[in-house]
Length: 241
Image (cartoon, rainbow, N blue to C red; front, side, top):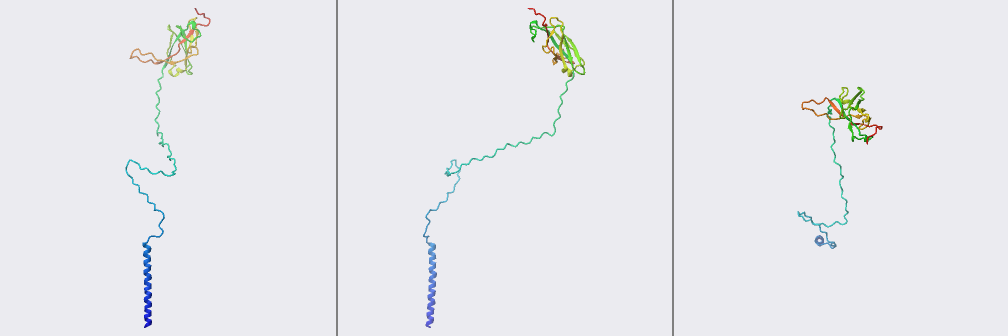
């Protein structure tokens, strides 16, 4: 009976010790959660930057300059020449319009022959010259198909007119020349080369005389001009003072 009581007392004592240990651990845990740590941080926490609000105002908010911000050169986009649209040639070219061929006409030649003043012998001038009547000129055309030589004689005004010839038309006028032939005056019979009177003057297209009446028909030929030509006293002829 005594041993049973001793055993029960031991069990009760063990139970009490166990309960005490449990409560002691709970108290320690509560203290560790409620007390602040022994070593607080030695620096203050950095505050977060304040958010930037966009306001619709005309004034600008100055921002602090960046320290040591490298300046970069602006980058320009490459400039390219504008692309031209390809030029396409027309698919079909218009047919060239042929110019009308001028009508072929006969050729007449006119000009004047003078006698130079004796004091101007050897000088290409007509100062003091007088018309020479009865002088002869020669029209020569070197057309291989129809070679032509026609004479003309001056009137009292020194004027000559060579009538049209059926074998000479405007198509062959460029092959013709007119030159001095003879003079009726013994004191003025030396031909001069004034206006190619000796070598031969080319035919120059002239103007046809105006129509006498509105109903008159135009001339059936073209008038060409040469000269004026001149004879002069020979070197053996003395000039009167």
